[in-house]
Length: 240
Image (cartoon, rainbow, N blue to C red; front, side, top):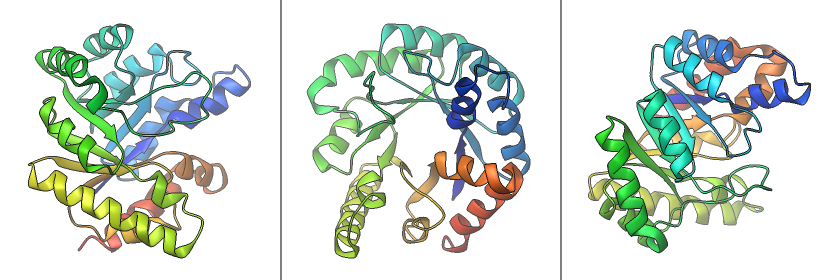
């Protein structure tokens, strides 16, 4: 299993004061030195945190792999084809949301997504879809031509009771099982932290976790290096 560190909220802190610090690019390099297997960031239409400058500097400096989350729009496709990350993760986007609120509705827009994905793939970019643990949506992901999905774990992370969390975990496991049977590579993320990661880290079929806010919050107290190493230890402790 790998840990991919999402550096969005280093940029959120930077933008809170319209400052130059903290630099998400420096944070990404420190995360790599601490053992992260990839760097993730989300460029939004309103540019609320990550900017084009960040994307190009990340592309030029990181040594692992760059995964850019973005909406499936013509504007974002143009940016992706200029930056050339290893992976583009297609996510839904609402202007007023604090964070991504759910997985992409693939069934409802399959025809459009198929052509959008093909254009990115022809540009040498691997495409992922951020998707809820919904079997119909996961089947649609395969039909539109991707071989990689990221399962949205927010229903598990935000469950109010122990039983609700167990039920959500079972839905995630069922979704992962279907994805693997269809030949999809499985990543997982959203709402994961130092306290809820262990049950998911025990699922061997997950090859990578994407975690951002929890690491950024911990880094504000203990530093990037330690925050990333602690999360890697949790991810790897249950993956053998």
